[in-house]
Length: 441
Image (cartoon, rainbow, N blue to C red):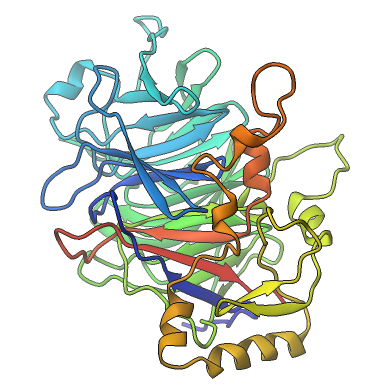
């Protein structure tokens, strides 16, 4: 298989965890919102019923309640998405007998930090999705879309469901009018860009796949994006949006053959590129059934609009930064004209000369310097932030609430990708967290 090497090297660091933290796990669910990463359930030596919030700036975990009646039980291979301050968890229930009469959906209010009971408003004659595992869940506008999954006693499914957040009503999308489509699928990945959803790989029955599908939310049509290069057959991998591209990490042709490759698919050129590792960085080991979460403006899904001419957040923030790189505590950071209390955002110049300087600096580290380089966060002044990102210290807008919203906090984070957990795992240890930043040239 031919492969085109990407010109954007990746910088990896492992983030050691201390204090209260979740145990290592796989087949869990995670998502990012407002600068935090939420991790729910999964499996270690047994199915887990715990719920955690990860503060990225402080590298700290907080366990959230998951014992109330409205909270989910033990889950694995479930999904979790965020929309306007609310988390929506679907599927992953273990007891198939119990799932016959229950819609496997749970709702968590991020601001109040509590699970909330939701009323099933679907008329009795309406169909609702049954429990499943290994499905995908994405958000378009104000709705969640569920594709596929493995249903007990029924094998892989090709059902395509939509949940309207405003009404909490389910509808089954009719994609059976044409034979074109991914078909029955589980353990695949899906993510959104503009008005399309992109689905890659997974299992179709018992056979692993390496196909990439695009679903247009406007025309409700599928198309297969054939490519001569790219990842091989994969299950248990993760994908996230990054600017005008998709990043794919890990997975394997089976659970016994995990990989640690990082791929980038360009929506513009419809080509794959395998990302190289920046010298001096510490990439993660092979991973499967892990989770990936993107933070920062470049990882925010783009939406289709015909009226806004506002530049993208990544462009706005990048214009505020100097392009001059300087070393700080064994890290490479941009010089900043902001005050000492702000987050220093990581950036790279577009020149080949600057990349050479970064590589020379990383290669020049040795001994303890190299170890410290691999164990650091990309935040220069962590102590300038409280556990809640110092929101309580900001000026209020008169309503008693901080002026900055969760969304604005997320837009001012540096661009980084987190890889959490996965197999193979070491039991009785805390969850592994790896951080990746890209040097886009």
